[in-house]
Figure: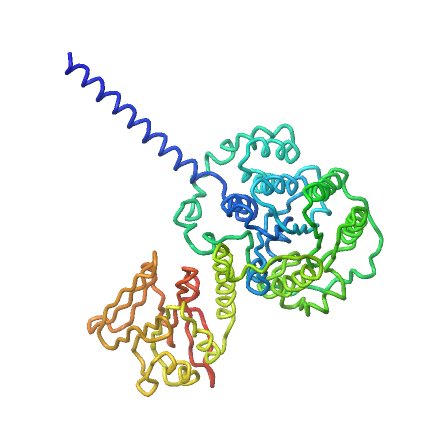
Length: 487
């Protein structure tokens, strides 16, 4: 009898174990397949991770908010603990529900609203924007209300029961679908801001002459007013802004109407699209834009500083720099500044200036001298000596590893070396039987048959390979080229 009872118990435990494994596997699968768009879903998901009542400045809006308002600069230069809670092409009804969610855990000292959504002329966004602006909302009741406004009736339950949309994403899965991807500082200290590193010259608009007003879409106006009224109700100061971009006449007329509505409520409204602000910011339309709608890594700094100066004139925002409980903002600022410096490094073509920019403790640098070493590296003698390299001994066929600003390894003739850099492997080897130098990053060859000096740069803070490049001697100068030409 006891034997039978024991067998039944074992059988029950086995069934429970199988069920637990099944539930665990299903949870992992659903987590991998679900949407994780950085321009909407992740913004609100990471807001839920912020310490309660830690956000002093809450920024709302569309991509004109999360690409143009640099939270790193706000903290590093002004001590403002800001978070950008926005989504791609986000309409005001989504912004309103994002705000209601934020106010459950945060009591900001200021809300900044970018009014690009005033140009909204449709009752619903496209499929992608509905996903990005609704499916990150954790509270099912709030999500239900937001989706009622965001989606056509015949599609409502597809969005509400979102697994219908993502259950077959197997072919789209990438590194960003798994937890390891989010251990980088960019995500670990994420504050809703994303840098656009592109540069595309734009034609400078002339908005000053446009003074007429055009009514907003009724649904757009309704929720624009609801946002203002909610801020009034919660006694939270509101600043309404429009970031600079290549706007047209129709949009400017909508912004003029938005200002008129803001004036009704006594809410300050600043449209940074004017000759006054273009000039005071020293905005360069040939260099400071990523596209016609967004500032790049250079332009967002100019705009953010202008915005911060206006905030300081009107509102009392505490300086959180140096406060232990705001260390995540300090680290976020460090990440933003570091990745911006990395972009300036990529854009640098002068070999001497390039090596000067390499003087960062966080860089791990591999220098492989294949040919024309004396000519090429002679242009940056002082920089090389500052790393501890004996420039009198520089010659073709050597490899140096510079870590923490000093030489960590040097090799010549025959050698085999492997470096583990976080989750990456950098290896290089050369032998009598194989005299050609091989340098691989995660198993992929980074040296071609082209002559020159090869440089690889790894950022140990942001945990990214900044670039692999080659300097070749051309005429009387060292020309910067890709390490391996793309096919």
